[in-house]
Image (cartoon, rainbow over all chains, first blue to last red; front, side, top):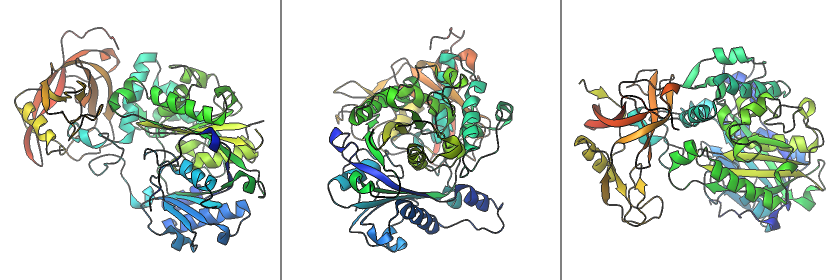
Length: 406
Length: 146
């Protein structure tokens, strides 16, 4: 079964469903094992990754596996029978339409669909499980073997030698840099800032501090972008236990509520939207829908995580969702506004640049930790509402999470 | 000119038509008969904007445009191509943005907004020889206009 149509952003669904438990694989230890740097540990298989995330999420939620009556799994490579692999037989089960928690399959967003299934009473305790193993399968993110990425993005330009996700961000940033007069050193501030956040996260893969000089000395992948501008490829798994909010309140942890989401997609002239519009139109539309559903304004959001496939794309999201005026994101970053301790801390786990490339699933986990007050040395004080966003090269999918009672 | 080896094109249907025009030294795109939208890359069956199936008309374009963006591959994704490998984004006078290669220049900040025009360079891929549209500067470079 594939997921059916996800419910659109609707105030009636706001805060009806909550995250009751979170579980992750050991990003850093597994990364070291995959590189032969942990002699006593072999890299786990996809099945082992899924199992560990699932069991940790259950323990976090204070539930037993036989209480799980729903399972949605999103895996790359695909796993056909995840329930059997986990040793459960939930009546509600679905393979996610996408590897992303939101987006990449119009109207079939995984998290909104899962929330809809709970709100409709199709299940009461739903595990949403994600796993990816690009390091084990040696996935290449550019070239003739890579054909993903949606309409006419990667594959058409092979004869001109242009492909890869990174090349999209590079074209965006070259234009942005010319338009607003920013430099590569200005951009490096983002990588340095996220690494500084990662040093406060014991799960982060990249924890050694980074200086701007080291950034500028690092190799390019696609100029003007360096390896340190691009997210990590690593294997891992994330599991979320979702329940209706009143059920989640009986658990050992404070529930974190799914308050709002939005969705907007480019339908034509993709390169125009990507480069000349910097995706601002789709981000604004989706962001406004999510805020309206949550009954919040931008000023209520105290923590933001944007899809940091690339440093420049994260800056673009701060501008596109309205947290900074166009062309000012890097200046505001240099002034400290988006650092830990700043007015709007961004990607506080280190993001996909420094914590782990978990397609944004780790953003949900980080938002939950922050809203529960469990983020330790990187805790944002007095936080009531967090926004995270999956933003691809052609679509925008924000999700707002809130503390109970706010 | 020596034939350059390139990664394989997308072929079949309207894509074959596009490359046939290139062989004649013409840059053409499908213009929707209903909403007049120019399709790029070619569409198989319907207009990407209004979904009309009236997309059989191929308009000849001027081949002129200006440089909007660029990126340089330092990581080799294709065995056929050396690195560094320059790619550019050109906004055609008729509106569409196209990814291509610079011909006879290297892109950089001084050329942001520079006027360019199409040239056709002889290449070959697994399906044989073809004429690839690339872009040369129109001299002298115009001042940057975004």
